Image (cartoon, rainbow, N blue to C red; front, side):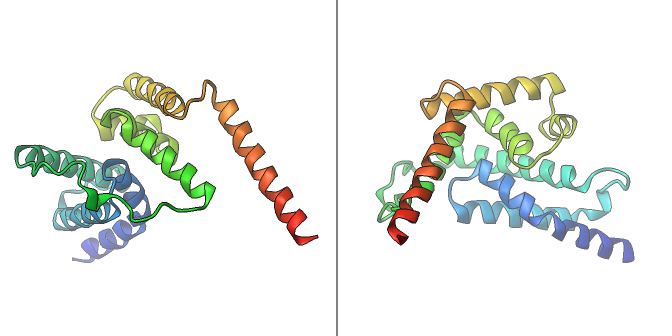
Length: 187
């Protein structure tokens, strides 16, 4: 029982990473939170199956991935047909430019095939190694690298950029322009 208590503490440490990974699968924050909760429930219920000496984070990510795909298969069999439901759209769009840019990047990631967005979130956002990502996704390291390259190219294409450097330069230009206008307004 003492070992299970130590496992529970370890699981709690990974909640922020699990939330971030869940957002790769689910567009709605509530659905992502539900996926995290279900992952944690399954992890705690099966803590005795966790092999000491392995990475708990990878184990939990694998549980989440499998849970998502199980849910997805069930949902496609029971699809209600409300993919473009008006009630899912926000009432008003945010005015902040950074928020709009963030939403555009999120849409770009969501437009990718799940295998690519999954790898992009694991490696690019959460900093998981290629080897761990390969274990989580059940594929070879080379496949992970290939999916990551295609994912990055897909995001850039969605955003209308040719090179990542152009996107960074544009972001820096916008930041500098905002700073200058803020200083001019204070003068």
